[in-house]
Length: 149
Ligand code: FES
Image (cartoon, rainbow, N blue to C red; front, side, top):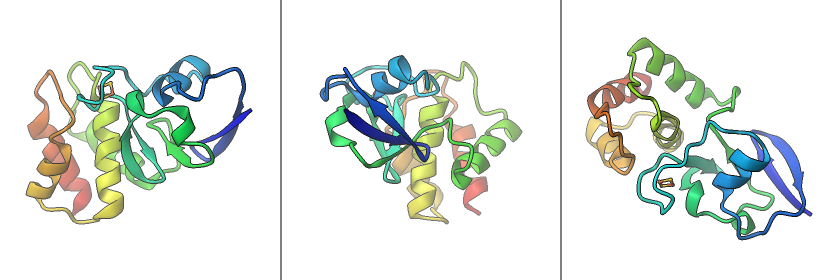
């Protein structure tokens, strides 16, 4: 039996290999489908979640590494940074196809938890690992900068 804490709720998991990537635990076992599958090899950022407040790639993080730690996903309705970012994402109509946006927001939320007032260069540096095929980078920068003020 494995305990996993997601969005402040403890789930007891059984019959899941400890080598299963968290992405698939979230999506296939817990029906938390806001976290997206992109490349599957830690390169695109679509699957970003927080582990104890730090952004990680859930496609390449096995269940064995997150036992009894706090995972935060895009579905968290009590996380202040995520809620602020979701609001400004709507205000600026950031998303186009939308597929990468949960990962973008999660990575931005990790940045804002560690640095309340990042510069534009710091935002660009942190966000550059999250790929957007629609090229919404300027809107993402504007949105994160607005929350950072
Ligand atoms: Fe995990 Fe691309 S799906 S980094």
